[in-house]
Length: 312
Image 1 (cartoon, rainbow, N blue to C red):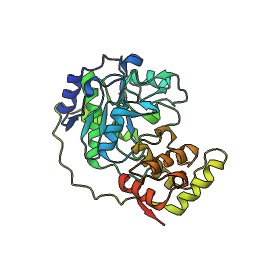
Image 2 (cartoon, helix red, strand yellow; image 1 turned 60 degrees about the vertical axis):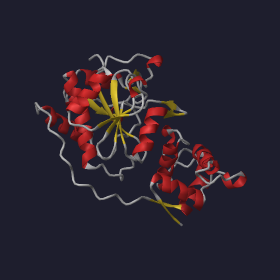
Image 3 (cartoon, one colour; image 1 turned 45 degrees about the vertical axis):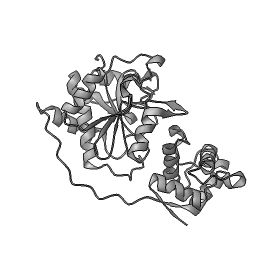
């Protein structure tokens, strides 16, 4: 348990750990403190954004969206390892989680219990870092980004006198969450533990630039089939995995709430896609041409914005 760091101390801790930090807009006063308390702090929580593109991800985390006002974290960690500070104070990132997990983190237990309840306010007690990644298990985690996650978490642990056991993933806190997806929190805690054994943080090495990942492809015919069949189906079946790519793009563009990114092209996704079709960026379509069923032009426009290609 600790008193939250001031904005100046937070910035200094991150930079002292060798991180490149960008202060985004009025991050020092961007918070949700009017909605509840901030502190005492018990740990650091790691998330993935389910978005692509640094600028868009940073703005989304700073502003939030219609279903969840910003800030959505304290810092955004880009794929190149840059940390963008977007909030200071209470942030909408952790939500309700398991009180047993909170006690384990506060006590720095060796193991994290199963998160089977959502009964405790996590926004009060955790620093949050959103890491730019689609969260589909295929989007890569560059070495520079993983090192930045390690350094950012270690910086806060070092500032508060915590061990690596004060760092958890969103998936360990709130039932139903999967982030961060693509590496394990045990492996990340191991990296943080190794770093905390170093008395003087070393300057980050400049990693070799990773080969750019191949842009994901969305099959238009399969996407249309999902858009026509999913709203009528019982439950939320995922009939075509490419739906998640499109939904992530709609979330990134501000047309779909992040909690609705589930791979099911249901009524909410149809409505969101219709809004995209009607927008200037989506083609300014009207009437039946903006019915929420993807067309090649509107999907290609969305793909250019989000970084995916369209196949017939």
